[in-house]
Image 1 (spheres, rainbow, N blue to C red):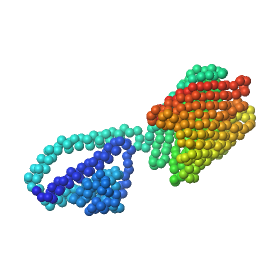
Image 2: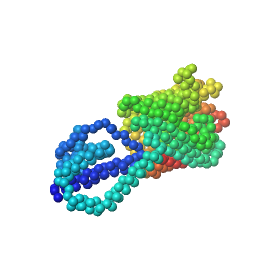
Image 3: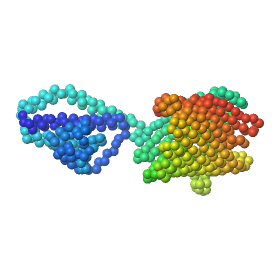
Image 4: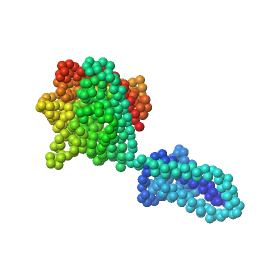
Length: 499
């Protein structure tokens, strides 16, 4: 049997083995990721090479160097891209697989034609086929199984463009010491499902479904919404914060997309107002805190009663300096007869933020609302508000010091609110945060003094799916209506599940 003939036999498993390995990897990756990649189908003129050294991105240290060297120099059936690269780390398309396999088969056909096959050689080939029949059948079965699993995933996948993300928050709140209106232990919960879709890879369409019940920190003062309730509970701007009864509604509905490399535009049909338009609220309490006051309440105090349609812009002036602006209309949207910027309960915000990776984060904000949800004046009729605020966070590595101040003018008066506190990152556990903050909140319905709130919390991430946050909350509200203060101390426990 000639040397050329045996070379052809050796080329068969080398070529087919390389092809099956790469295509098998592509099938496995396809099964793991339900999204279908769109490869460029434009014509590519592959270049024949005679030495592996011609490939600029193949090094002798690569684990497959010897295999490539053999296929190139012994059989001449490996081609490169026109720029003399092999691109061994990228996925193999079916077109490239066909081109490479055809090149190797042409070499095999030439070798066989030159040497011929006698009956003894043919018998040897058949014997080898029978000997490896079981292995070939096993390999064929595994490929068939992968193809079947891939077909099932494609048929049953939720969407190729949409990702479903959920969050559920459970709260257990109990009074420790309440001067007036002693209340019992209460439970509040909220469930969210976010449908996030992307059509270009850089945009996002979000539709959020939400159902919740309860928002009180037991006691008349807080259950009436005067301290804003809980951060991760039902909204309190509808006038009846504890009676949403898990009715599912579309809470957020917006589309966000980039324009160039520095500008992002958000068009909202529902759900965005106040701090929803800004890149960051600066203070690290916003998120880990159990009470809503951890997120500066001046964002909400000047907001519209219901977050209707709106539009927002976020422009990165530099890598650290960001300007955000947003406009929100009330329920019913824009009224053509009076124009977009004369909606009954419109509000708009502008904020300039300095966001670094180091010691200092800071921001200044301005909010205007034509119908405040919290401030009243002129016979109890809600009026317009203008709020000017500054925010600051000093990050010392293991701990931070942060706070804000806000000055608000409204129909009948003015108001100054503030919060300040500190926190320790990675306290006793990786990713945990211990924080204490307090301050005077914005004046609310019927109050003559700013309510005082102090909270201490400890956020503990048990894993990527579960976070437990115990907290102690103190509140003091002088209503000047009943002639006494509503003072309370509450213990709270929040469990957050993400899935």
